[in-house]
Image (cartoon, rainbow, N blue to C red):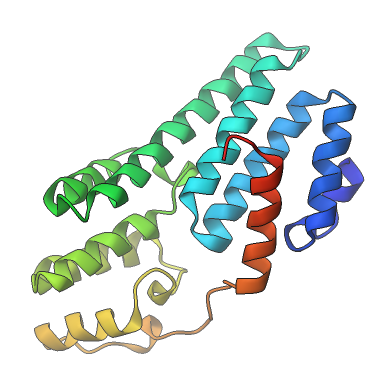
Length: 212
């Protein structure tokens, strides 16, 4: 299972199934927990699927809580980290679900999330800012939308903002304020979001984790 993790398991459903199977049969619950944690990160980074990520984190927590690690303090620390991640992911999921019925409350929750010191350990900051920018643009509050874009640039200096915010939305904001859209804000890379790869990986994780 350790060897299989060195392969490109993110794109090969069979490798994922085998890793989970080997760790389960070998009762290596701490290692299985680590793998589920890695799966959660893939769901967030590659597919922006926080619901499936929460399912993987939940399974990781279950496995780790049953594991018999040599160092109980280390185990408690890891359980605490997983619990914190799960809480933050749950809050972001809830904010997105609330948006349709109560956009003000959803935006308030997102702003509170951005105040969390360890937010980027569980959630991509750009995803939270992206929701805020889209909201303020729809409300035609271009000053606030631009303020969020500027905060993103400061916190994510090496990342192209179009990875998180629709290019058209950025153009609307800049045009409304008469601010030129400089080259470093233009698309330089295409977000990896292969439909076929995404569906395959998500189906495997969904099949293997009943908690989903």
